[in-house]
Length: 34
Image 1 (cartoon, helix red, strand yellow):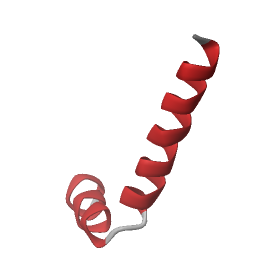
Image 2 (cartoon, one colour):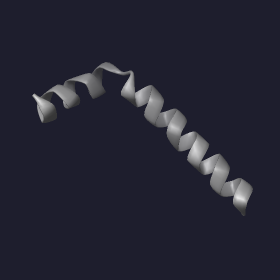
Image 3 (cartoon, helix red, strand yellow):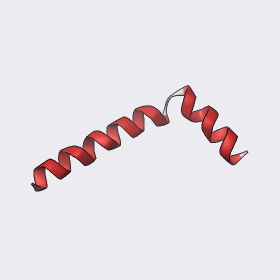
């Protein structure tokens, strides 16, 4: 069970990292924090 949680967390961080580097995230970040 611990390994499953670890894999889920790792995949979530990987997806977030890709999303964070995308243009869409930059636009959303600008809309919310500018």
